[in-house]
Length: 401
Image (cartoon, rainbow, N blue to C red; front, side, top):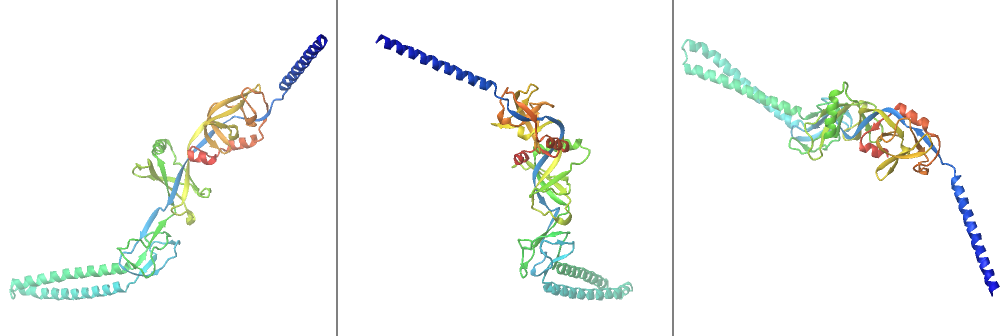
């Protein structure tokens, strides 16, 4: 029994020694594996320093420079529409016609009454001419002279009144031809042939709008308005405006600010500012949606990095900077405007530093990396040299994201 117990203890001790040796060996192998793991390869880009033009952008809507509401000045039945809806019309062009016959009859009647009054006036003048020398010779009484003078004056006044009636009838007759008061685009007719129209009608007949140049309304915040007014005093040249249409295209002609409304809307805190844009061919029409963009400032010596190099975490932003020792430094940064595929960084990096542009998901703080030039470096330099727009508005940032 003693021999068997000793043998058992011998084999137990041997097994523990073998297991411990195997464990130590595997641990050493794992440690050696970690030490020999190669540094990850990442692509790095230089931080570029450049003057960046900053643009502001506003939602806007188009309107006619002049919008003439066409209404009937006299009451009557509409018998003609002489224009094609949506066409360009000239000032003085007849758009609608009202039945003129009742007005022609009134005019003829007024002319007849005028003729009667003129005849009476001629008689009164002749009678006065005969009585005057007789009165001087005292052949007639002074009362007869006074009566003749009064009759002449009364008939002359009647002629003037009758002439006014004729003039009014002629004006009413001319109003049966409803003309455009301006050059512009005529809208859809709001009435039909045969309808009774007149000054008491609620709806207008149509609207004619001058659209070259076209007016663009911008609801500008009070803060932006004050800032623009203050900077406008320092500018030597007016700001050129760009008009971006609903399909994303840019209107080929630049615009200028025209005027600001007299007051700020207390409900929205915005003031309506009007801009004018040339509109040859009348392509733009009132009521269109658009965006107006203006270069408001130039940010001197801005630091630019690829947008893909910036990561966002719970509303904060950071970049991975690679030092001369090829070690990574994760830094928080303050971002500003976006410029195509680049991002302006306000704080956190310096000009000439290198940041990870590709493979940022592989790196950690203090990790050694194998840096390679970023494959998009040439594109970044091209974009930085051309410096297209950088929008300072939240709407533009959200759109580009």
